[in-house]
Length: 449
Ligand code: PLP
Image (cartoon, rainbow, N blue to C red; front, side, top):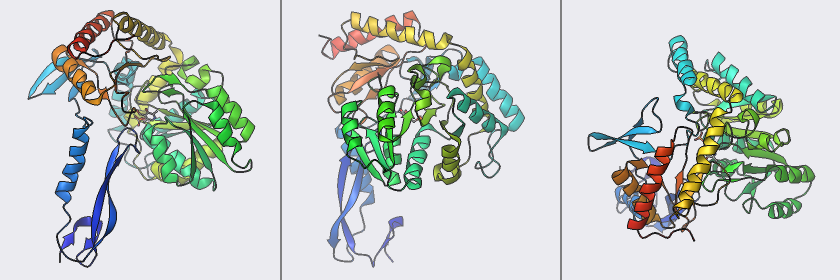
């Protein structure tokens, strides 16, 4: 029998013609997929799997959007220094694009806590949360995160992506008729969660309260609603209008869901995030965060009232049917969250470093984009040039910064996204500015007006 692979198409099934579609539906990933178009007579040639996969990749390459991962190992205690592995050799590089914003992945307290937990509990958790994977480390960390956000409870996930995906898709199933109002620049994980929930979605213009208000007005007051937005939009570095969104939510009877992935640890008293900084934390119903960026390790979470958390705990497949985080990861995060609750040193240093870098880039006439936050984007405006600038920085100046291309940012807005940390010294900043200046000239790129 002719087999048409695991797609279940057998010789008896009609032959199909497939058409490739491309788009940006998955935000960070972009996608290319083959869709069933119409029917051909039975029998004939097998489906050309090999060429179809290759064509998908060729399409990415032709637009300079094919991703090449730099193979690096960071040097403990020397962050942001790392070794780049290429052609069986390694070279030192300075990392300028990590989301380890505060260098907490290197913090002695975090490393000690992880080591101790490995010694005590071993490597893996051994199961899903329900089947022996709830360790005392997980329980303590959830209590700590709930306290950080002054909420009744918190729930851990294996990543920030999964927290958004699992929670938003589950809320739609729990609240039939739910309409989700989603900022147009929301992260792929929120878009995916909303899509998988299968409910109604209204996209409002980025940070546009008037547009959000008019869209809220158009939905029946009695219908369940949720507004999903971010506190820091990590490609432009601007803040979400937390208090304004809460005002509208209260007026129209909507729940609020904030992604604080680029805010927790970095803003607000004790690092509780932008909503806390803006005095609006208690007004937000569900706070989502990551443990992988400012907290320096891995995992994600939501914090909310006890019933919401219990519902997501009880109904979200993305929480229930997967092995829990390793105990050492939970222990490391716990040490990190506790440290950053008590210490402003890292936060203050990060914001000072970001200001300095923005100033020095502007002094050199480089097109640093306006950003109120710790993120420092520099506009290139073309995918191929962006990749070429990034390659030149890596190979000629030992500086690693990833190109940011469509669909992560719109076409024509391709950029380099610098993320300074407290560990980036004045010397590193000067070296970076000099290197960028040279590469900019060599590529004949536009300077700031
Ligand atoms: N939300 C936003 C806004 C993000 O930028 C990211 C990751 O970059 C995530 C969620 C996913 O977080 P994690 O990396 O923990 O999966």
